[in-house]
Image: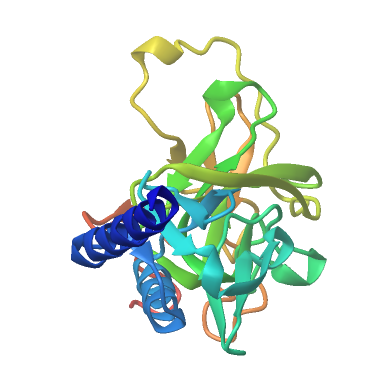
Length: 288
């Protein structure tokens, strides 16, 4: 009798537990991505925004990706077959259990800049300038610093506004007959630094008719910011205007010796700068 009652009690208790479990809602975290399609769409948004994954944490139930804006993308581990960060390629790849693949922009460990990326004197008339071409699989913007020979007061810095993947960076202020160090920093849209790389850009010597400049006294605290434009006439046409820094180093000049129309340029009144930064002058030899 007691044994039968015990069996009956166990069956009743089991039914009660089942009934309670059926009534309880299953808690689902809405922030966890649980389908490959959700992950693929979220990664496409990151690529469009130019937001990178900078770190990740893996536990038994989720992959948690930390973004550079401090947000988080959390993915259910039940849908992930393989997770592979590739900092060399600025990407991380996820293979899902259904065979599909998603790729997210990831913080890289190198800027793909080689000697083939740098073109010195791209216009043919500005020997102390260069063009650096950089293509990356993630959006960003660049800041550059031309490292001066005389400390921070001789440095030249510029931040480019374009936020994109393919970049053409104009570099000015190189030293003649010298391998100038140029520091390139890749940043996010808010200007937060991601990675920096130094390159060397070599140039040839100045033309023989350029002056040698000696600075006796330089009261830099009283000087306006920037450098000095000299309308140098030299030893005849073509005149070669140049820009020098406060240490007497020539950091830019234009030489039209090989130009088909300006090779005999001669300006009596010198060069002037417009509000937009462009230079203008009149050519005595052509009266234009």
